[in-house]
Length: 132
Image 1 (tube, rainbow, N blue to C red):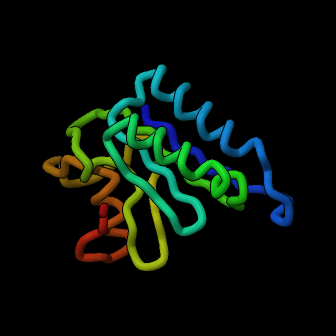
Image 2 (image 1 turned 180 degrees about the vertical axis):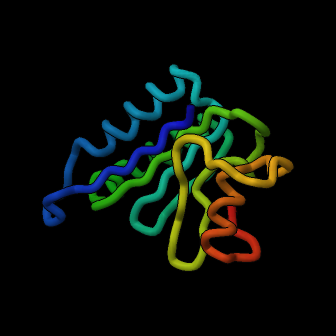
């Protein structure tokens, strides 16, 4: 199953030098447990969606200080149950939102292959969610 993680600081006034370590630990742990099919992170209006673990870790390393100074961090580590590809990686944008989830969304149309994407698309009433 995918892993969806949301971190928020309770004391927003002080940087937290542990956030980078937490993010890196979740990344390594999730990868070791089979979540190898896509990676998503969002913090301070910056985000990355990728299929490449090395790109993801490089991005985290480059943004160590920004991560530590973030008040909120969203992470998603994908374990594919259907297709693989960038369009399957969670972290879709619409309006001022970025959305992802963990688990399976029940859909009536069994021909739908990407339950998460189609769920958010329907709920948000967007013609197409952006994944780039």
